[in-house]
Amino acid sequence: MNNTHPRASGGFGAIAAIFVLVVLASLAAAIVRLGQSTQTGSAQDILGARAWATARAGTEWGLYQALKGSWTTCSGASQTLDLTADTGMRVTVSCTSNLYNEGENTGGTAQTLRLYTVNAVACNSTSCPDNAHAMQPGYIERRRQVQATQ
Image 1 (cartoon, one colour):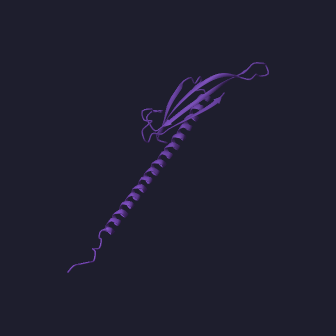
Image 2 (cartoon, helix red, strand yellow):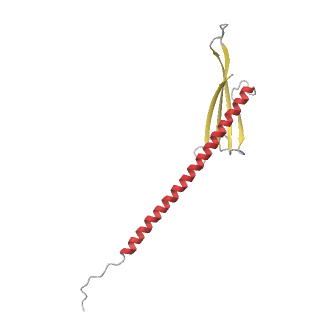
């Protein structure tokens, strides 16, 4: 007996099933990766907000010190505040000041004012700014500068 019917192709279903599994595995890997990057970004945002709050606290502290007279000349004065217990950050506060004459008063002489410039650099390292750690993942640094006259 001679069989004149062609043989049925087998294995097409197995190839389709493997293709679907590969596509689903790739989709799952992409979702996991997206979730990890979202979580990392959120953590960086929170650390950035803490660093900004620490820098702000540093400038306010520096202005207080300068205006109350602790840093009378404020020439290159610098101090590092350890706020790791509250914010997980340290802040280096520096201050400079200059005298300048502003306008004239009724007697024809200029009024002399002192301009204070307070800089604060907050970061999550042992010293701020930390150039050695600046390019490493997880390092956060924020700078803030304020000026006041007296």
